[in-house]
Image 1 (tube, one colour):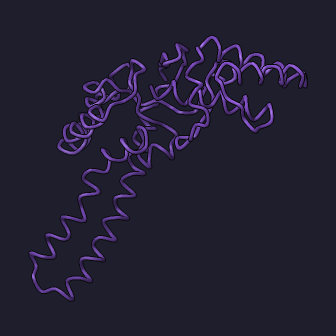
Image 2: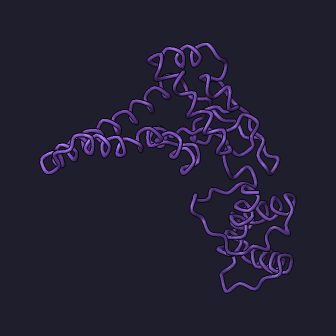
Image 3: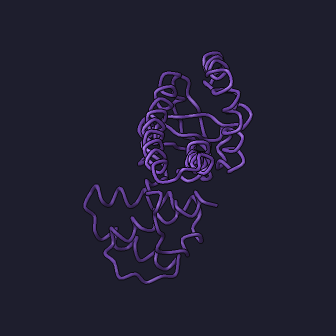
Length: 241
């Protein structure tokens, strides 16, 4: 498997593994299974409606309307779930930009449009050939959009950087953390980890007071949860700039 070095907005280089052809195919097959279940349900619904509605054109129109979620599945799933479909989520893989920038909706649109060539028109042969013979296992759509599919199984330990693991629906508490710099955040995390490791609660409390003064807040929280929230908030704002 090829490795991909991505430079984050915090100027931290993270090495990711570009997923194999097999992993991409398996993710696609999982999505196809979902399509099959959905189409079966649509068939049941339209068959039942056919018993009550005699107009075949009306039934046909309803059927085509119900098929729209399948047609646009890849597009809206990637946009809504940060480069993932259900298959990619299960396989722990996602679409990212090669240059480390956030993936724009127009990139997902390019991927979706070129699925016609990569997958549907030529029965997957074009996409498969590109996946096999390109260095980063990219299909034609990936090359046009400047994207690649990576494994989200993090190899670089998050504790070695100023990055913090935050949920996609994370809600920040202290907006003023944007007054911190990358150097500040790195120093805070280093002192925080050392203080925790040695159970030095005096240092932890002093750190908390210093951070409060810098970001100009007074929080009704214990020292450890406060520093933890500050680091997560900082990552939230810098990752979404």
